[in-house]
Image (tube, rainbow over all chains, first blue to last red; front, side, top):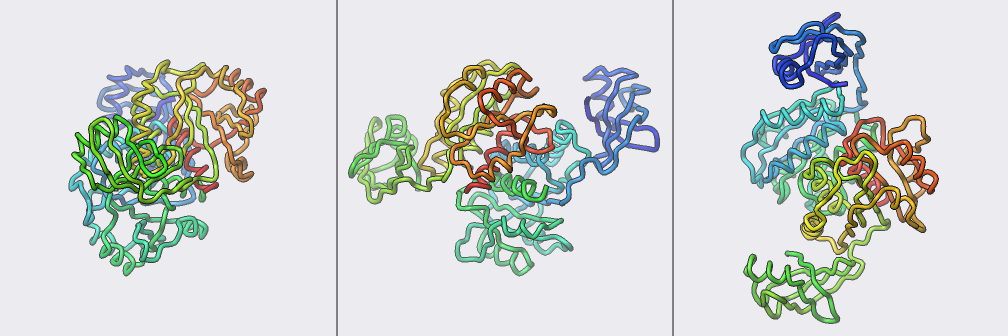
Length: 235
Length: 235
């Protein structure tokens, strides 16, 4: 059964304008079709379409599940965008499938890319959410300066910075996960890593330096490993 | 320092013809340059180039490491190729970075793709091996019929088939990894999964049915998770 984004009310759901167009014009859907609708906030409704227009498809809710397949952790990954957008996009698709709640793009000292196409990224995340039948849509934040980001208040979060500086203290990420944190924030640096100053600034702001293993990973591979490991250990 | 593929002898290394061309013509390398050379079989040599031609670059070995960063397991993933080649290619790149030893492409009942470009796939795997500075080049096998593959003799391998058939016994993959197998073979099905007959045939041939979790993963995501989890638990 297909999943669409929309507004979920007491007994009915209304697809967003874009989704209505997709249902009516691209998929040529009809009244009586059975669909799933999510608001991206944990509600998953099994519905029957009652009226079709390309601006607003309405559906009657047959069954509503709240907190649908809710994970028992909240994962926020802050990543310096990769030079090749395809690699970042693939990361976003996989991270959404596996389980991520929030993504921030970091502008750091060694970042090679200074801009991102937020709208395109949101589309990828939406599409992966639908494809993997999830009821939670990850939040995507725009490019943020590293120096501003580390000073942001993330109350209740276990804050980590993955880096490769051998002479600045690092804890294996396993050890962090063994404390079963419920809210995790991980910063992943660009090719060329975070600068020494950035790592020290993060430490001053209570980020724990972590290592993801002995291997030399590309940015998006390190980020993927962090997402996989979190899911694997905390699921 | 850059890594190249070549033949490693007693005191010297000779780059392959393709790599020699790359070194001499693309990178415009010179005598006296320091490079790393691997044979893809575990040998990693730190070298100094002594003669340059576009057919055969020769280098003197300064330091040779055997069994360089050898993993303590051997992982063979047999995967039904995805409809979109990009997704399969990204899987291959990530799997090579994280750690995979052998890849076979499976032609199964629900496979949507009946052909693969083996040469292109080998290039991707070679390139990821070089980029992540590894001394072991994963072996890539051509498209093989599922029915032939399951009957192949894989002595000493813990053989697994990941599937989603709820009423055919499945063991969580964690449990398999907890037995610390040294040789693991995992089959990952196409979108639409392996057929019931295929799963039963695999069972008859001593494959253990495994589940990779509750989530609905795309083919390449399931394969990636298997690679990550194996590395995470056995590294």
